[in-house]
Length: 311
Ligand code: NAD
Ligand code: UDP
Image 1 (cartoon, protein in one colour):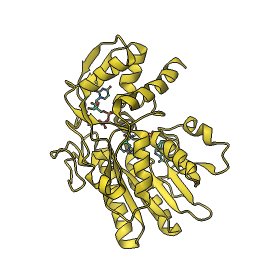
Image 2 (cartoon, rainbow, N blue to C red):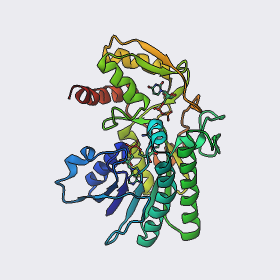
Image 3 (tube, helix red, strand yellow):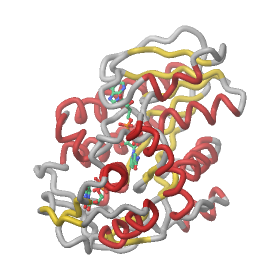
Image 4 (cartoon, rainbow, N blue to C red):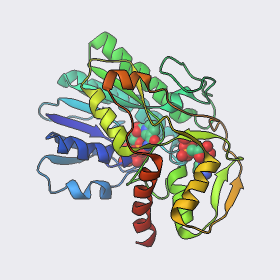
């Protein structure tokens, strides 16, 4: 099989490239490095089944030969990144999704869109199920990402309904692991980097807001399963084990043995107060659930960041 992955030089995308190569696919990785880097794919470069294409997917792309699968993962994903690149974020969610869906239609390829728990916004239902329509501020600072992804879902469903493209939508909840950028601003690299450097850990607000963290290998496994189903509506993938950010910061202090203190900073605008996936659908449809406990995943991720901080 021949599989094209946009955003393949990013955190999740590079793990997907590894998984698809491991399953015997030929992988075409498309990225423009706006938030990713080739270092994430360095180990794949000698592999004859791996091809890298530097391209901004918000512009149309032509690919020679057949394609069996297209996974659209290109998009700035951390709040700091998408606030730094608001227009490219809107473009890759809209134009990039249109371009990749057009390619899937032309090649009769399976299609999978990386959507997000952010489509639920600051949710009024907890935990979040796929039939919840969300609570998003379209003109707030996070709107560039949330609305781009909501538009991307609408576009994907339309290509399924009107052009019979075999589409799939994964709503990804906070995922972490090796190859996150230390400076991407998300809570895992921020707090781990701070703990390892002996700096204060920045907790926004009073830290009572919650998230549910999924280790990247678990996510990738769910995505691989979803791609080969006959199911076209969105599927939540994430770890339902919920924790407050303050509690999470304390876990990082304990795990790292750091003597850093916790420093409270203002809560960013529209920061969701709670987030936890209801994964009933994924359990039933894919026979999937996360296997890596937070402590184990955090240990592995901390090892990765240790090398980055010291290197
Ligand atoms: P990331 O920033 O590490 O990866 C995104 C990649 O897309 C980068 O390599 C970037 O250079 C590339 N990219 C962005 N715009 C592009 C464009 N126009 N053309 C080509 N390449 C482009 O982020 P990530 O965490 O790996 O996220 C990957 C995908 O998963 C995103 O679509 C994101 O919205 C989604 N997602 C991730 C999470 C998470 O917790 N990691 C949660 C929800 C959704
Ligand atoms: N956060 C924090 N300190 C940081 C970075 C983030 O307290 O240094 C908080 C942030 O306000 C949010 C949560 O951690 O409540 C998760 O933030 P992240 O940027 O990882 O992603 P989000 O889930 O908000 O998209």
